[in-house]
Length: 440
Image (cartoon, rainbow, N blue to C red; front, side, top):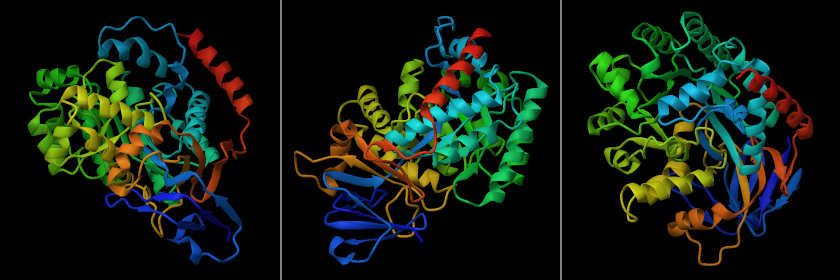
């Protein structure tokens, strides 16, 4: 069985009990972390030895809310000016997703997945929409995930906004892919039951989705109170708030993700905490769409599990966590939000991912060998109790040198080790994007 030894690196285990280990080495075998121990105790022969001198080893990053399909919006100048979030959806995203084919879904996933390898992000939880090319869309994305060697949870964005047929197709695509992923049992691909948002899902569709999801014993992935418009719609049409409506249908729970939650009140936070529902904060997207700043500091105090996602703005989680810190400071004051934002990335994302995958997000014996090496020679003392400060103000500006997922080296010495032709992928992706743009 192939073995990899990583030596001479400073090791950050992460997780709730993060430890900084000096003069230790990591042994990988069969896709798992076989052993972490004092470096001098490793004297065997190994298939591969990686010298981590001048580098920090840590778990690969986890992106808890992503949209691969947004890639084809890059550089698109045909969307009209949007003054609010509803117009952003109507002028850009709902025009783009209607035109996606399964080939588009595959290529739009490949580009951010390859970039994720470069940025050290090894697990992604995606939310897909292509209302007129629903069937088989998740299998197309799965193909891209497997070709890049990463780990992903996929779902289809169920919505009534495009009529009965796309809604029914969304129910079926979620159902079939959840069954398929459950049967795989390979810990590389997982599935959730996706829904767009409360304001685009009718009671009848929500009830059917809830029934199917519970029957399949899976969680739900939904945008919740991203904009104030979502709350206003829920109050006007259902006489309740968004989180209350989702709880009524049984959408919340420890296997579910409520993305954004920018406009929730104290009672909704209490519901999320009581139901053990994960909230995923997407600060750059929220700022870009001018919807507000989610109060993750208050959520953390209420006991809500808050993770960090990018909503497709980037796959660079170190970039995202810095934005989260700055915006929490802006919302409150510079004394608040730092720890909550960093903890969301370094500990809570692992907890969220482990609700679907087995043993990810921590460097620990028996856990998945998903880890990265970053160039870093600390200019000041680096210890466990000041690691967050080094991460935000130092490591975030460092380059990822090596990315390993499931024990497979995907990048080493900043060079990709994937069996993919990036030039051809770029050419084909551009060709497909141009066709889509011409239909805009």
